[in-house]
Every structure is written in structure tokens, then in C-alpha cells.
Length: 106
Image (cartoon, rainbow, N blue to C red):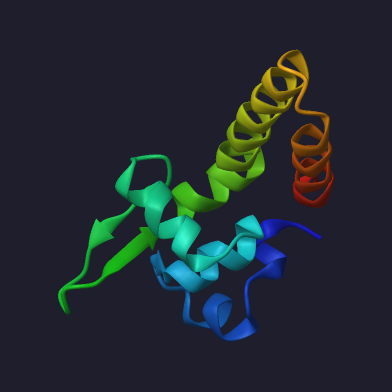
């Protein structure tokens, strides 16, 4: 199933140009707070909306999902932290990080 197909049907029917943070979180399979943090860090495209909120350009988000985007970057960072934990003898922590990586992998 493609990222566009995972969007709720009403989103596709409306043909909106912007996605909500919740919709982006569903696509990336993370929590909305993670999307908000990634948006603040510039890792997920976002634009201010008229009501003072934040929207995410649909085409840019779908492109990011198609390329593996943020999730691939996060997994790479977690792998590096896991290796560091192993190098300092923190096997329990490395195992915890390994389980998190396994959970996040598509």
C-alpha cells in the first residue's frame, strides 16, 4: 500500500494541498509530537496556516515518504547510538535500541 493510499479517504476526496500533523504522523508511522518536532527542525516540510496552526504540503510529504525521508534518517541515527552503546559495554541499552529499530523498520 502506498503512502497516498494510506491517507484517509476524505483527505484524498477533498484533494487538499495541506495535510494535518496527525495525517503526516499516520503516514510516517510516528506520533504527532514527533512530526511537530521534525517540522520545527526542518526535517518535515511545514507552512503556517491562516488559523495560526501548521499544515504540511501534501506533495512534499508524499515525496518524503516515497524516499524514506525522516524515518530512514532516524533509523540511521538510532543505529549509530546502538553501536556507541555496544562500544561502551551498555548491552542492555543497545538491546533496547535494537528493539526500537526493529519496531520502526517498515
